[in-house]
Picture 1 (cartoon, rainbow, N blue to C red):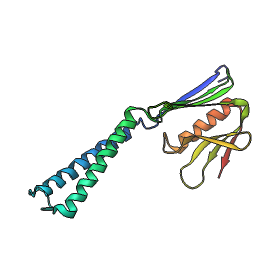
Picture 2: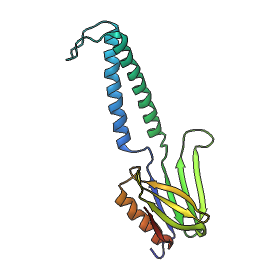
Picture 3: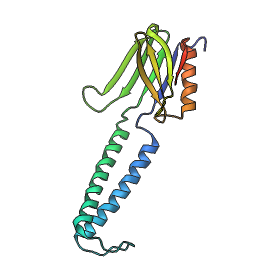
Picture 4: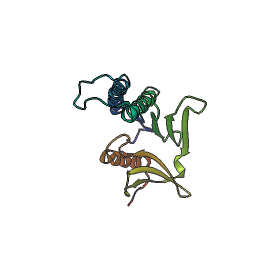
Length: 178
């Protein structure tokens, strides 16, 4: 790593296969709820073990849940295909800058980019308090900028290795905050 001046890795954000599979399961469940709601409204018998469902209130509530499920599926697929949260973290020794880039929702602020000078970095901090563990850049002036969170892209051990690589690449200390 002596002659390497740029360390860059991608962050998947919402563009993960698990999000797509989850959206498909929610969609299928919503379709079955919608079917049950329509059948109860039309007073048709279903071939299920539950027998006939009364439209008010069970069928109506199932229709409402199916609508919510379909809206959630639409939102999940939209964030997946628009690559919301997808981006990269770049540590550039040549330009002496750290660049954190993410894609947001369409509009004038779709491109989210934050740049910081490497000289302003005090340390790389690993927080392992209760809740999700994250890795942040600690800047001078006690400002912490989180850029990797456990479960968001990888397991904590892989994220920890990545933090060690970043700290050794930049030549700054790695701090464990418990």
